[in-house]
Amino acid sequence: MASGAGDKVVRIGGATASFSDTALSVPQLLAGGRLDYLIFDYLAEGSMGLFGRMQAANPAAGFGTDFLTVHVGPHLREIAARGVRVVANAGGVNPAGLAAALEAAIAEQGLALRVAHVDGDDLQPLLPTLRSQGLPDMFTGAPLPDPVISANAYLGAFPIAAALAAGADIVVTGRVVDSALALGPLIHEFGWTADEHDLLAAGTLAGHLLECGAQVTGGTFTDWRDVPDWAEIGYPIGECHADGTLVITKPEGTGGLVSVGTVAEQLLYEVGDPADYIVADVRCDFAGVRLEQVGPDRVRVSGARGHPPTPRYKTCITFDQGWRCTAYQPIIGEEAAAKAARQADALFARARRLLSAAGLPDFTRTETVMIGGEASFGAHGRYTDTRELICKLVADHPTRTGAEIFAREQWAAISGMAVGTSINLATTVLPLTGIHLGLVDKARVMPRMTIGGQATPIPAAAGEEGQPPAVPVPNAAPGTAPASSDAVSVDLVRLAWVRSGDKGHLFNVAVIARDPAWLPALAAALTPEAVAGWYAHLGPDGQPPRVERHFAPGLNALNFVVHDALTGGINASTRLDAAAKGMGQMLLRFPVPLAPDLLDRLAPSHLAEET
Image (cartoon, rainbow, N blue to C red; front, side, top):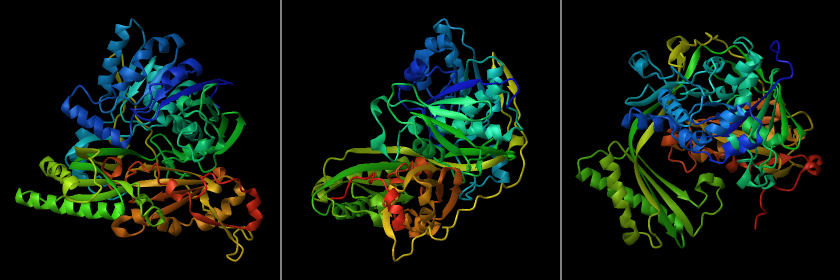
């Protein structure tokens, strides 16, 4: 414990999971949170490309304007009156621009709040060198693309802590690690140092739990029927202690739910190996983290461990991939899916004839996605004879003209193709943004903190090479895996909570045992091969995707990383679920053989009974 910290508790409220999150969270947290800090997560891989395109159109833009107009600007007077300090990565690709606009808004209201901004994450000046020396994608091995829209390193928390130490009331950043928004204040408040790796890992965990807003307070929870009052769902508060422990809660009288299940799901959201979660300041081991329900809507979190950081920053580079037309056609009547498939093939063929006549190249990709026929479930879909669906047609082309040719031609289907084709719901032609994730040496990047016009370099810890020990997945203990002759097949959802999320070209699916007694059966059934087979329809070239399996014994959880199943990443994927929010839902009916003597532990199904 840091000297002098005593029993001090730092209360941090998580107000946004994205730049488009609700306008209701801030007034709720200010009114009922008794906060020390309010944090805002605006950035994801997809949003960096959006902000980059904004700045290309207007050099003064490139930051989250909702920060000024929705989330913070309207509440500046109350923020000042309550003494709440604000940390946000709303600066996007132009944190200095947001800081200047914020200072103007503060002055206009006659307030005395001090603003600092953190930058140094922009890698654009380094691109020629990085391209010549090579910066392969960390997952696919693809070379550095061109032309680039944005290029940013994921900075750590120490520049934020330095800004707070310099007296900033509001700190806005560019691309930092999401969890740094909470870790920075904790470093400042408790005096944690760069070599206190367990504490840095604990603070990172606090940030990871808070950064996605209401996802930890019952939003997107497997047992959604158990979560009261979505309309008034409470946004999370972390009560953080100097020893790294924290309690996740929410304002009294709000909707939502804080339980071991909701916290465990968020803890593993968008995580690969829970024993090796790598951020700029520390290499975290969350595999042994313990969750304890210590009161209604209060969960105590402890047990994070840390190792020295790596010598590299993760980088996110977005690039121009051409143009995409997306059209949504309602198809109604008998054999709707078969009609939609034939219609899609015909429309793509017609558009190709028009491209050829215009002297244009072929489409780089075409895709047909059936919405409403359970095509997302692959071989496990049930409603193959649906009489109502939306046919999503995707056509990518190097030029806007090529994408627009398809946008126009697809309208012909309503009168010349499948019976039951109704008026198109929407057609868009938009630039297509790709994502390239890489690693760059920290020595090449210099984070800076600027306050009062004075910029101060804040170099990161150098980091170390090495690999922490892996946490082996347990084999089923003798007598716990049922023999095939007496096994009873049980839907996974009755045994576990399940949460999924995207990360570049891959997604993760966390399976958290509701009862530790079921973990051996889950481990025996959910092998990497079995999970790959379940998601076979999402793999490249018709092959099952590569699947890694990890273990978090403190959470009684298995975590699966499904590779190359979101080709193109969140911005460019053609999937119905490019954000992988529903990938875990596809697994809920996975059959798990269970020994008969464990059946009496089962709760009723969390799924509606089949009819």
